[in-house]
Image 1 (tube, rainbow, N blue to C red):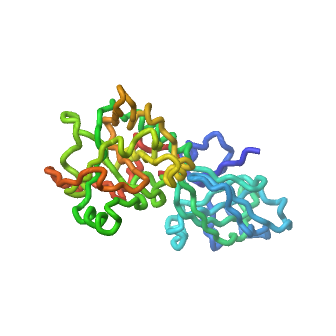
Image 2: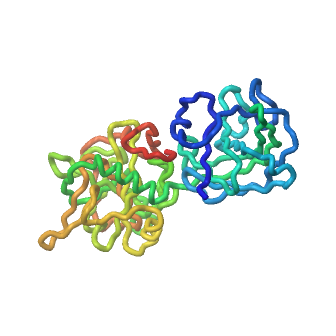
Image 3: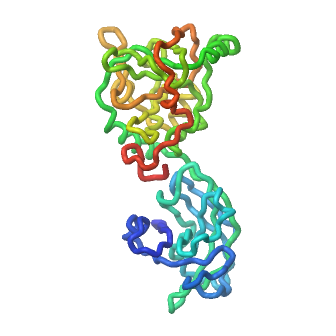
Length: 376
């Protein structure tokens, strides 16, 4: 049986929610607040004895849907015609009293066998904590509703993007990637103190660290994947890395084949922008069989290292040849430690452009180029 979908209870017949679910059988109603107080002209009758939901269970959680079920006493159960569900972001639960009585925040659905699927990217975001409470209702012949008391409030957190969602992002990124340019090195800019610290405390090797929360809010690598950020974009006129950088005046350069070769896997990690015309693509390079490789296999779309729109590695006449996409800024995460002796560290001659840093950068949720139809 296909689970019913829910929609916000909106008063306007042309609301965005109704546009999305216009083919579904839903009713626009106004609801009383959780204390059982009837809003003026709400169309909800005084409470009669209907079973109160308890022992609420949340399951099958995705980035923009979940299943909900609960237990009820059998008394008057056959009178239930609808369920009212109060869903709020956790940080708002203490202010869950209608500041504006004409802007309900509840969801309504006809009573169906449980568990019931709640699905909707217009009110569910990935990796977000929510509170939920449930009320049963019986619609009367005059259009009024008899309602039960509210259930207890429970909390849950939505999931990260799945591979399906990331593949949608991947396909959008491919559209704007542009033509491929040659590259020969990966590079990483940092302050001098960073490299000194790695030499003194980590045996001359740069160590992976947990990725920050930049990019898409639903990205499964944010706050979880450990790696080292590298860049690989080149200047069109020179074919070399740019001399400016947001991340520090000292640059470690390493030959591309030292990090990216047939003994590594390549994964697509994210696609985003920061309220600018520039778009960023995050790629992950993981040595075969490494912990990073196992992490990515379960969560990220894998790319063919010889044939993709972003970063390629091919052998030509016995020499490895590398290309990168021209029209996106690539951020490459390498998941293993990298010994500084494999490359060189030198001071750049350009400027340190701090304004271009993507550290913990928030994705523009309104950009049509890099967003998909799930929570941002």
